[in-house]
Image 1 (spheres, rainbow, N blue to C red):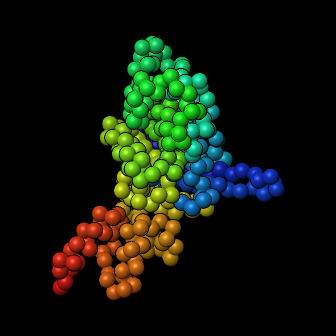
Image 2 (image 1 turned 90 degrees about the vertical axis):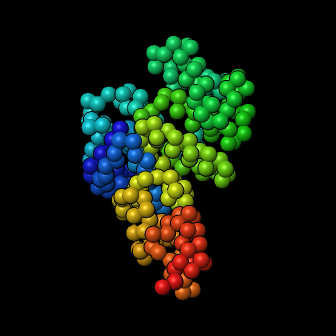
Image 3 (image 1 turned 180 degrees about the vertical axis):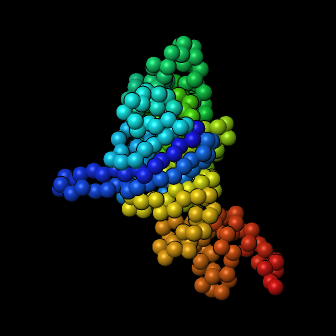
Length: 286
């Protein structure tokens, strides 16, 4: 499903009475089945944008279209939006509440019209997708699980509805490298089946390696957008380039300071290893 945002703005008032512009005239388009990263410093408006796309807040100005329909229109049925867009917020494990894992994950299907057997099959699929043994975990209390397991159960509770658009706010924060890569591979598999995915993250490497397009927010404005590699290269050229530098780019910068200039196309570890191998083998000599 496609997403189109036109001149989106949002403000909120702090307890002191000061009004803060969280988003200012933001516009972009996301094609059907795209895999998009959203990044920016703390306070740049990332979470606010996610909440607006999910229909959880109404913008002060601008419009949001999903598959050509304006979800910001007063007449739009928000129930349809909930069936289309799944959202995983930061620390989703704190959203767990049911007596068993199975009931918690099944909650999102309460008004789906599916039969009991169909619900059970869908819950099994969601939990197994997140790496659980369904029969072992279904009757356990979600609150008795480890922190990482709680997060995976909470995400299963979103996946179970099979949303056509999946938005995740810092989903890999706190995961170990193996857990991070496994989860990102899962998102890639979902994306390959047609799910449009948006991921908010501070993890530059994850965004560089897995997303196809990137949105960069700064102080509520859209600083840059486009194909992921191109955006990272442009950010590298800015004075505040460290806002969006991957580790590979930082290493390339340090090497350039020591008279080993590498191509500007170095963004990921794979890029860095490839050009260093070429340099060491003499391929970079004229």
